Length: 475
Ligand code: SAM
Ligand code: SF4
Image (cartoon, rainbow, N blue to C red; front, side, top):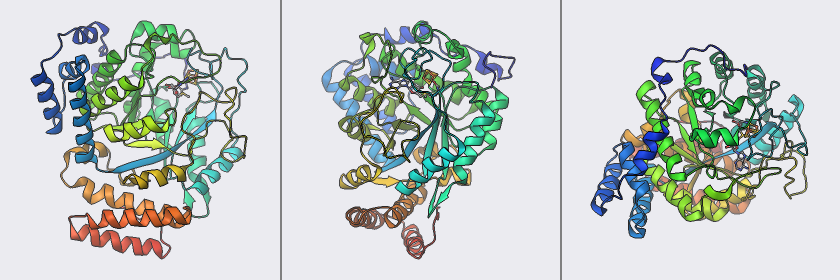
C-alpha cells in the first residue's frame, strides 16, 4: 500500500471534482417545495425512477411534519413493494487496530495511547472464524485500521485465511472489506483473493470538516479517499460500498453528497455502488467530536427514508452501533442488511470475555449486543425472512440490487428462494429448537406465497436435499 498518493491511472471523467460543496449547498438553499411537488417526487420513486439531485434536495428541504410522514410512508412502501421481507445478515471481524491516522472520532486514532493495539495472527483468525461459523455466520466484513502492516497483500492473505476455515458444516461464503483506500495495484491484489464488497466511507463530503476531523496521516488527503473507489473500479472491483459518518457535518448536505457520489459511479462506470452505510458517531475512547452536527433519532429515520427513495436500488446497511429500536424502524424504511452477534474487541468471538465492552480495546460503543440467534428470533417474530444468501455474488450476477429493483420477478426467482434455503441451513445446523419451529413456519408461509409453481416446486425439492445433508444449494 502506498500511503503517499502516487501516480495512478483513473478515468478522466472520474478526475473531475464531482463533489462541489458550492453546488450542494445551493441545492439545499432552494425554496421549500410545494406539497404537490413532494408527492410527485415520492410517486416518481415508487414508479421505479431514479431521483435527480434537485428532487432529493426538495425532499431534504421539506420540513412540514405531514409531508415528512408521507416521505416515510413512501419509503416503507418502496421497501415492501420492491424488496419484500428479506433481511441479509452478516458479522464484522476486526483484524487489526493499529492505525497511523488520527481521526478525531475514532478510538483507534494514533494519539489514543490507551488503546491496546493488536493484529490477529493467522491462528487467531482461524479461531475467530471457527467461532463465527459455529454461530451460523456465512458473510463477514473484515475491518482494519490504516497501517503499513495492513498492506494489500496482508489484506489478501487474511481474506484467503478466512475462506479456508471450515468448521463442521460451517464456511464463510462471502468476505467483504472495510479498509483504507489502496492504489490500483493494491485493489487488484485484494480482488484476486475473492472479496465481495470493498467499503470506503468518505466520513464527511465537506472538505473543511474533513480536514478538521482528519488532522494527520494518509487519511488527511480528502481527494485520495474520494477517488479510492474509482481506483478500486480500475483494479477490477465493481462491488463497492460508500458511506458517511453522520455527526461530522450537516446531515442534509451529506445525504445529497452520497447521492452525488452515486451519480458519479453511474455516469462513469454505468453501475452504482452496491451498498450505502450511514453510521452515526458513537462514544469511543479519546475522541473529540463537536456535538453541533449530532443527528437525532427523528432526523436519522428521516434521512434513511429519503435515501431509500433517492437510491432505490442500492443495498442499505445499518450496524449494531444503533440500538434495537432504531434498527427495527430503519428496517421498515429501507435497511436491507444488518449485522448480528457483533463483537468489536479483537479476538472476542473465540474467547469468552466479559460481556462489558472495553473501549480501550475497541473502536466505538455498540448498542445492540443481541446474539445472532436472538436477532433471527426477533426477525422471524416480526415476519421478516432472515437471509445468508451469497448467490448473486457466487454466480457473478453483479449489480443484484439493481436487478432486484428493475428486473420483474428477480426477487421471486432468486432472492426469496435463496433466503429460504440459507435460513433452512441455519435452522438445521445452528438454531435452538424454539427458533427451529418458528423458522419453518416462516419458510412454509413464504413458500405458500410463491406465485410461480415451478419456483416453489424447485425450492421445496432443494429443501429436501438440504434435509438430506446437502449444503450450499442456491439459484
Ligand atoms: N480504518 C479504515 C478507514 O478508516 O477507512 C477502516 C474503517 S474504520 C475501522 C470503520 C468505520 O468506522 C470508519 O470508516 C468510520 O466511519 C466508523 N467509525 C469510526 N469511529 C466511529 C465512532 N466513534 N462511532 C461510529 N462509527 C465510527
Ligand atoms: Fe484509523 Fe479508520 Fe479509526 Fe481513522 S477511522 S483512526 S483510519 S481505524
